[in-house]
Amino acid sequence: MFTGIVTDVGRVRAVRDTERDRRFEIETAFDTTGIDIGASVSHAGCCLTVVETGPGWFAVEVSGETLSKTTLDQWREGRRVNLERAARVGDELGGHIVSGHVDGVGEVVSVAEEGGSHRVSIRAPRPLHRYIAPKGSIAVEGVSLTVNEVEDDVFGVNLIPHTWDVTTLGELKPGSRVNLEIDMLARYLARWRETA
Image (tube, rainbow, N blue to C red; front, side, top):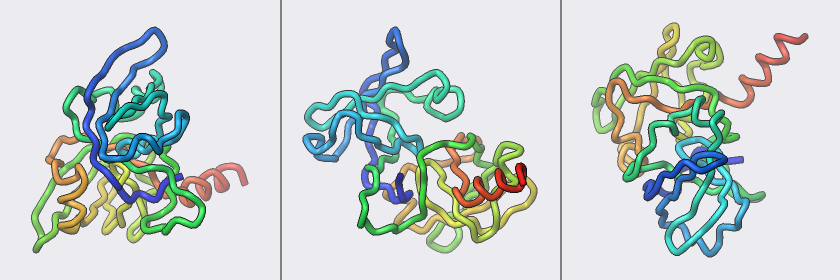
């Protein structure tokens, strides 16, 4: 589990297809001596398992399923990536409960300055848009955000200067593809409604 509060922006330092999956090596400011093999780390909202570590870097392997359902199929060397270590019992829950299971890939429709902040509109894939509600929570590229408004399949979020500056969201532009995770409560309520 994660909270959607990014604690480092890493960089893809190597990409390699293996006989099993695709392997990414990620440069990070995290103390990698404290990252266990098998640990979960959120990468742009996608929970991945650490398979190797070295000084200032760690490696993960990504399945074809994950590549087909996220933006990770576009990752190349040099790409900056929002990172978050898994939450521990007793940690401050500064964002919202995030599982690291990407529900779909959205597309940025517009980015506009608004005071010191930026308003970003994102088109969610159908039928995922049904689970996004005004003033609800959503994770975009692993960042916990509050939904401002929803109109059909497009929703808006407001990025304060801090979020714009310390995550990869400051690089968004129209056409950017972003990993989306809907609020966990919405997911379970929708399933309950389908089966009740």
